[in-house]
Every structure is written in structure tokens, then in C-alpha cells.
Image 1 (cartoon, rainbow, N blue to C red):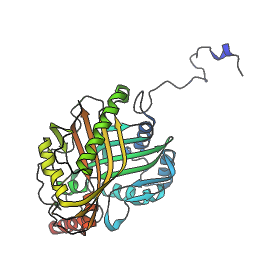
Image 2 (image 1 turned 135 degrees about the horizontal axis):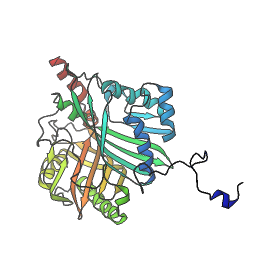
Image 3 (image 1 turned 45 degrees about the horizontal axis):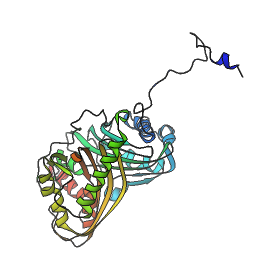
Image 4 (image 1 turned 90 degrees about the vertical axis):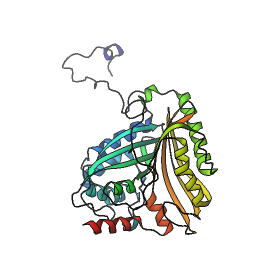
Length: 359
């Protein structure tokens, strides 16, 4: 070994032992481990690295995933690629199906919150719809669509173990005129970025105060508990002037009153004996998210469907920006195809009939 004083010599130009230049970690200085891992993996998704070549794609992706990884996508009916165990099953299922239907889909993340073991993102993708998605053909013009997307991740060490992912299929169908649900009670503003300068995507980890994270999580858990477990309809954890980007078929609320009137109260009125199962809650700074299921007996009309008496599974992904003890903005995607499937209704079949009627 070289003497210590030799090891301290400055690196000179042309020295082959030059160390690599310093650079920030993915996500910037202070980014939690889970954010760094997910950003590294996501790069391969966004540049579509070897997307249709299993050997090359798996070589790129394997370093980021545990061998027993789970990719848990939204309900897709008889196509049955919603939940994949292992990279190969994911590649042969959702990955290839989605990329054939919506090739070169470019995603923009506007929220990415994380801890060392959890991460979540809120995004939208832009793509031409070129081939059938879960059996539903695109319009003949193969139009551009905006795909609302959310992801949650559970990370073990430096590898992803579980990825929960939902896209807003109903909203995508509505964009091309396949209206599988009744007209929404509120107009939609889209799926917009936060109205705050907290970084892009938000939040910038280096700028996060841990005390703000703890305060946000307290508000967020209380809101989830009251809105869904207690069936409270007053939305007291939401700012009166909040904006809530609700799922396709519901629309955008511009006040806590609209949110309660057009989302919470109809939901509570339609289901009895409701239970809630939360898979994951993630908070960083002012931003929080949760992936959860609601289970209830369908005893009232909901989104146009009269009571069936069946036990319904409602899969949800929700996010919020919290300031001054109140939720200022919210984003939500609901896996309506799954919920309607458990009612005995095939939303993909409805969309397919609408598509064939105009083809």
C-alpha cells in the first residue's frame, strides 16, 4: 500500500488514478434512499431502455428489484396482468401490453415523496393510443391521450420489493369519448401540478424540514381516518378553498364543500359496513400519499349503478399537499374497473362496445 502522505498527493492532469468527479445523488443532496432507488429504476422506464427485449431489459432492471418483487397494477379484466410476481411476469404482462397500446409514453412526475424505505409519485403520461388496451381499441385517429398515473413503492435496502401502480383508465376513456360512467358531477381541470414552489418534482428533499413531515403525516392520517373509516362528511381537514383533482367520472372540486358533496357523501350513502385497509402511507415535507382499499356492501346507487347488495372492493391512491394544518390540494385515482367488476359490471366491455359503435 502507498504511504499515507503519498495517498494525499493532489491528482495531476493525465493521472490514470483520477477519481470520478463528484456529483449529487439522484433526487439531489439529502434524497432518501428509496427516492434514489426509484429514480434510478424510473430512468429506464422513461427512456424505454430495451423495452421489448427481455434479456437486455431485465439486465437493466434487475439491479433495482428484489428477486421476489411484486408489481401490482390496476384491474384489467380477463387480460389478467394486474398483479405480477417477478420481473419476467411483469415484462410479459403489463409492461409489454401497455407499451404496445401506448408506445413511447413520456411521463412527467410532479410529486415524488419518500423515506428511506418508501416512495410515492404522482405523474401523467403523454402518448398516442395506438393499439387495444385491455381489449378496448383506440379511435381510428389514434389520438394523443394524457394518462393519469400514481405509484407507491416499498423498498428493502437498495431494491424495490413492491410497486403499487394505478392509472386512471376511466379518464383516458373519457378523453376519446368512451363515456363508461354517467356525466361527472363536477367539471375536470385535469391532473395538475402543485401550486407551490417546492421543487420539481415536489418536494426537494434538501429543503424538507422533518418537523413539517411529521405535522403533515398527522393531518393526513387524521383525514383518511375521518373521511373513510368514520364516514365523516364535513371534510374538516381540508382547506375551504382547496382544490381536489378527483378521478375520471367525478371531476375537480374547488372547495371542501364540493369535495364532500360530490365525493364523500355519495360514497358513504352507497356503501354499508365499510372497512379500510391501508397498504402504505408516505409523507415528505408538505406532501403525503396513501394506497388503500375500501370494502363495503353496495346498498345505494353509486356512479349510476343501483344497489347490488354485493361486497365491493374500491382500490384508491390519494395524495395531498398540506400547509398550515390543512390539506390545500389533493389528487386521487380510483380503480373503478375493479370496483365495478365486484358489482358484476364490466367497464372494459362497456368501453369496447362504445369503441366498436363508432368504428
